[in-house]
Length: 212
Image (tube, rainbow, N blue to C red; front, side, top):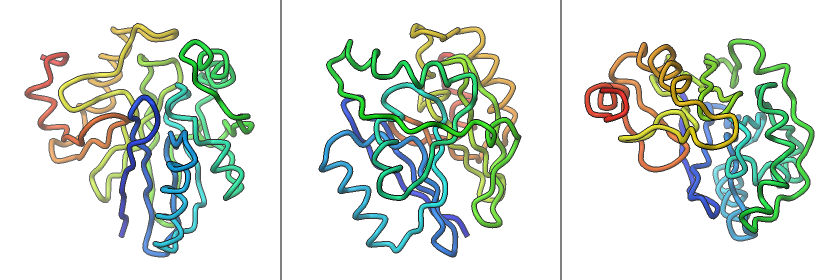
């Protein structure tokens, strides 16, 4: 049995996701905690629920999705797993942050081997890794078939899609990624996005203005 929850953190109102199994093994996805209070909120929830963080995954390397990586590394010793096509963007975060006046703490070295495969496991629970570029070069989505949900990063939102006007973005590529990798899922799949409210594949299939 998997459970999940999210926290909205940082100056970009980014959704940080936690997913955990029946043994309390926990995956932290896109930690965007920026302030000490936000870091404490994440740590308190994990401790109060007796969770054991075992995986740190970045769906992509935009600054708002990696601000908490250094904190997670420091507290739980986890290195972030990242698609290799986003490594350059990852290490440019400090420079990008300076443009917006955002301090980026020293980023831990990412692991890239895991996301070159097509799956990862949280205990016995399998997550299919789907490569979904367009918002940025190395974005991935994590599809959990057993419980019918997808961690979609900034690929697909409730009534919208990820921006494509940032470095490495491409509108046609993003639309192709969504149609090929997400709209091929069943309508009942829940979409856990990197910003805003949850949605479903079925809802976006019929009502998302970018897809119709």
